[in-house]
Image (cartoon, rainbow, N blue to C red; front, side, top):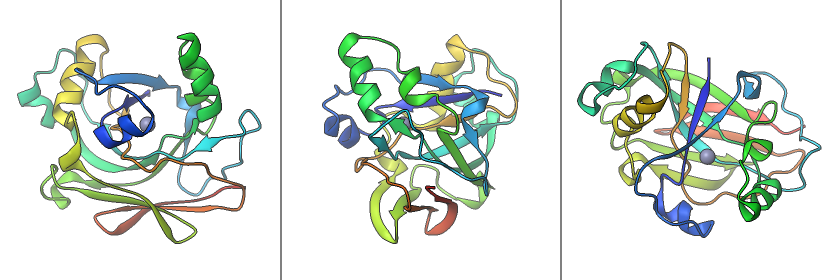
Length: 203
Ligand code: ZN
């Protein structure tokens, strides 16, 4: 399986990192070794001094597809969950300054924790999903899919122009504003429409 992440998909987040609003979805990838399954321990990686949380809604691909039309894209995913796109912001800024790829900052081991999934039919209107990240009980990020620049179907149509999507692939759909540093000892909790979907202690 592969993990595809969308960058700059909420305009307020693009602005907080001084990025332009993209005219098409920006995507990058993480390897399967970046996945951290529910209940597995997360250790603060030594490679960074500025590890940022990015809470994101994740969609799970359930059918092989290439060149998927936007109008049929909804048939290619059934389950939705929450994940964190951990980012070594110091390394990412160095890469961006030099115009280099971001993998060092984004694709390291366990940089993609994932929580539980739910059938999308249980979520109702996919263009009005609330999600939230709390750290040590305090609200740090809050988002709603109504603010997505590119919705799930548009993302799938775009990515599948370039890359074949396969069963089990995960798409991290972008983070809302409020990204900041995490520290050893922090407890992260992700909520989807008010329900706890992801929990992680930084060790
Ligand atoms: Zn992200």
